[in-house]
Amino acid sequence: MSEENINISSEVLNKSKKITKIVTILLVVAALLSVFFFIQYRSSLKDPDALNREKIESLVVKVEKLIDLPQGELPTLAEITSIENLKDQPFFAKAKVGDQVLLYTVARKAYLYDPVANVIVEVASVNLGN
Image 1 (tube, rainbow, N blue to C red):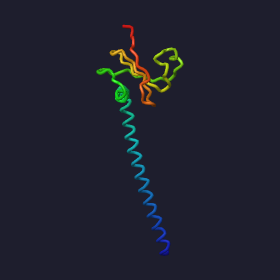
Image 2 (cartoon, one colour; image 1 turned 90 degrees about the horizontal axis):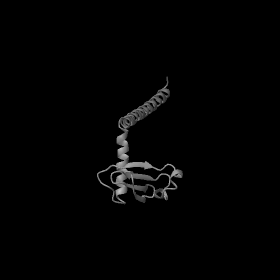
Image 3 (cartoon, rainbow, N blue to C red; image 1 turned 30 degrees about the vertical axis):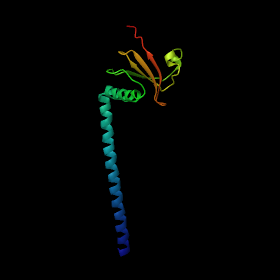
Image 4 (cartoon, helix red, strand yellow; image 1 turned 60 degrees about the vertical axis):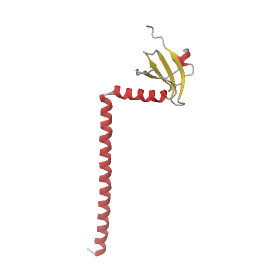
């Protein structure tokens, strides 16, 4: 083998080692990310109520900046997915798909919130038939 062939082989070997190191690092990062997201996924399966509670609490914090909300009660949250069945109800007259309703059963209040515009659309007292 000539000296030139040895130099070329050495360069190819060095490049090959660099590529192997880069691929190895990428595989390790991908594995760590996979483990992280798998753990997050498993924890969400264990307590879906906690995720829902966190979502409601987060929304309450946003809405409390706009209006005083009843204290000591976690509301029920509903998202409007269709307005067809709600057209005839005055509370939902200005509602649109994506708006959210916070229903406080103890305080007997309902709040219609538009998360896109970050505004309270409607507030109403609720008669629960009791």
